[in-house]
Image 1 (tube, rainbow, N blue to C red):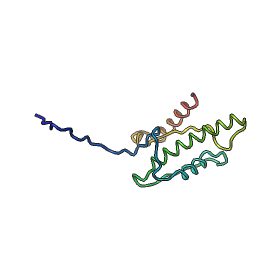
Image 2 (image 1 turned 90 degrees about the vertical axis):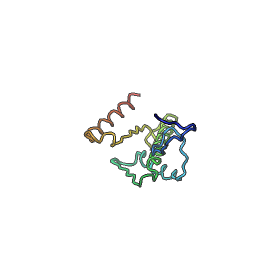
Image 3 (image 1 turned 45 degrees about the vertical axis):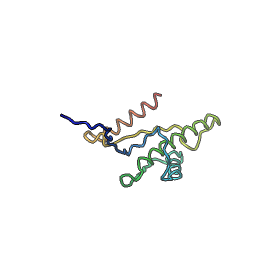
Length: 131
């Protein structure tokens, strides 16, 4: 027989490293300038690909938070420059149509990683271009 106490037992909890892209993210790390700088390098038409960005840090150092802020900044910037291109009828020096595709290699660790990555990219592009 299970004995249940007559008081409400506390529920266990946890803190995930997931940064909800829709949630308001208070910048306690003060990374706004770094986010803006990297975002403008990534969306600049003057930068010749290929371009790789590595983000390294210990667990809990803010990598997921940084990437969420970066994704938001890039999307906001692309939307802004797309509007400017429409208003001025001239191309911008910044990319105004950006497709951001997230890929978590851990979700594909049991399969062919490269094939999964390429398929995921094509699926993401197909979805973005069909909208």
